[in-house]
Image (cartoon, rainbow, N blue to C red; front, side, top):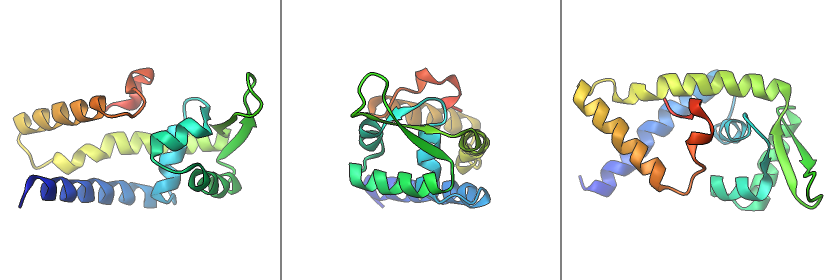
Amino acid sequence: MGYGDKLFWLSVVIQRKYAEICAEFDLPPSQATLLCAVRNEPRQMADLAASLGMTKNALSQLVDRVARRELVGRASSAQDRRVVMLSATPTGKVLAEAFYAQVVERLPEIAKDLDADDQRDFERVATAVVAASDLPSPAANPRATP
């Protein structure tokens, strides 16, 4: 099995564990990811679409579904009324915090069968991959890393 194959299967293992946690919260993975992305502070829809790798139209449809559940809300930016901001509602924030806490606690279970040195190496490499990505910095939220 080549390196790309291993990364593919690693993504399946991660997605499977994430989906398991999502199901316990009655959240489709896409809705859970969106909710976690706005749990701490409002985000611009355009920036959020880029961070999540979605088109603005696809994000808008996702937001519609989550807004119908009264978990997120849209508002115009105070600085520029053309800019749409997305934030978690109080109910959405409670759900997002509970969900995110479970993800942070349980996602590392995918490496539970590794020895302690390999677990540290896995954490180091995962940290480096995320740091090298174009995702928002987890430094803005100290709870963002396990």
